[in-house]
Amino acid sequence: MILTALAVLLLGLGYSSWRLVTIAPMTPTLRWIVVGLWLGAFALSLVSLLIRGGLSVALTRYTYPFGTSWIFWLLYLVLLFLALDLLRLIPQLRPLLVPSWPLAGVLGLLIVGIFAWGSYRYQHKVRVPLELTVAKQLERPIKIVGISDLHLGYTIGREELSRWVELINAEHPDLILIAGDLVDGDVRPVLEDRLAELVNQLEAPVYACLGNHEYIGGEAREKGFIRQTKIQLLQDSVATFEDKIYIIGRDDATNRHRRSLQELTAGLDRTRPILLLDHQPHHLEEAEAAGIDLQLSGHTHRGQVFPLNLVVDQLYERAHGYHRRGATQYYVSSGIGIWGGKYRIGTQSEYAVITLRPQSN
Image (cartoon, rainbow, N blue to C red):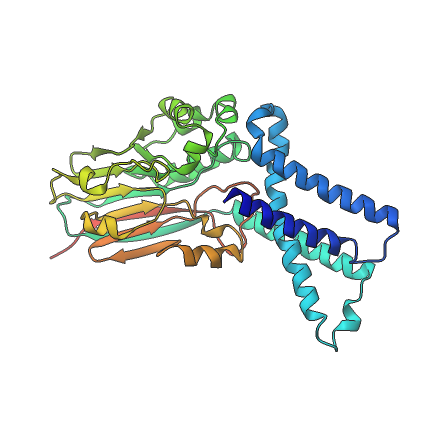
């Protein structure tokens, strides 16, 4: 998997480097400068992804956001250069697309505009209201805020988390559910920024499951941070909310020996609503077979940027949004946070506001 990703990166790097120095007339010296800067950005990206834990927190606060953003810049440069090459196959357009500085300027403005829009989209969180019913015993409607993929760390710190806490508290929920990836990976900036203080300002009970990024950063270290917060971590375990609703948190699928849903639901009172937190939305049929009423997942980010959302949509039965199988309902969140560069192009950062009601006869 890593070798495949590296091969794709190198292919894109080679193609984009070639096109960068042929987009406009350049002297040999300028070409070397352009290629050198582009290769330097690639090297910084590799450092950010592969050895960030070996760098100081202060340095990584700069290298990680830049290095991860570079991957998205590379993607869009490759797409735009490919589009130019295809358009040059049309004889009528070829004279307009000869290498020139005006063409390079238009391309540069287009890239800046795309990512400025993507940054704007990321910063504006989308409230997703869901009115759901369950054919179970429920004395009153329960208001739930469901989120996933906070990715706290080098790119998301105190200022942004504080805004999220305000958004969530403004809903006055009965409970808050977090479907994994609370921490991006390296827990050091999370501890240094004292983010547990902000998490503890959430005014409702909070339940969470682990995501794959908790394993990337080291499960024990991530759980150490969670213990500093009011979050009740459910790792292949079950909690009861107000003695009325079961909340199951599965361990992430990274753990190949995690317990099955059949084991976790054994002995539960089936007249009560059963909610499930499972970070990765694979094998949705398992929740249906286990009699789950509502599953909340995340992980996919819905690809974060176009056209990756089209690819991700093909990898999952439901990569984003509401879904139903029989009596089991699902919501797959695209995440309130993000991995790496803070851009949303063709996708959204969101939080779900779920009102769970008993089904009327």
